[in-house]
Picture 1 (cartoon, rainbow, N blue to C red):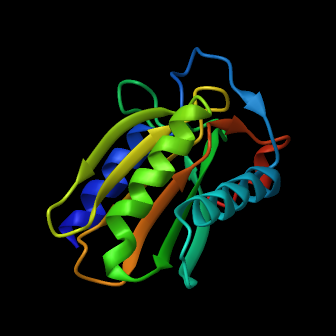
Picture 2 (cartoon, helix red, strand yellow):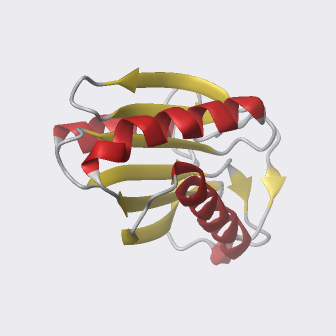
Length: 163
C-alpha cells in the first residue's frame, strides 16, 4: 500500500498542472479521459506480454498550483489507475524496453529503478502534451501498478467536471 501511495504522489507531481496564472488548454473531460485510455493501451503494447488489464479506473481531479493550492475554477486533470497482469519474470525487461522506446520518442524519463527482484519503477512525462505515468512492481506479484495523468485542462463549461 505504501508503494502505491508513493507512486501516486510521484505521478501527481507529473500531472502537468500549472499555476493559477498560467494558461491551460480547454478540453472536454471525456476527450482527456480517452487520451489517458489511449496512453494506457500504448503502455500495454510497449510492455509486451500483458495478459490482462485489471482495476481500470479513471476520474477527473482538480489541478493543483505550484504552491499546492487546489483549483476552484474548474481546471482538472484525468487520473487513470490500472493493474497490468504479466509474468513476474518479465517485469524488469518489460520496463526496460518501454523506457527505451519512450525515450526514443522524446519522453522525459524521470526515474528508472530496476530491482534485483526483477521488478522496478518507471516514471516518465511527455513534454509535448504534459501527460505522465508511473509504473511500479515489486517483481514478487504478477501485476504492474500503473498511474497515468493527463495535462491540466479547463473544461468547455464548468459543469462538465464531475467534482
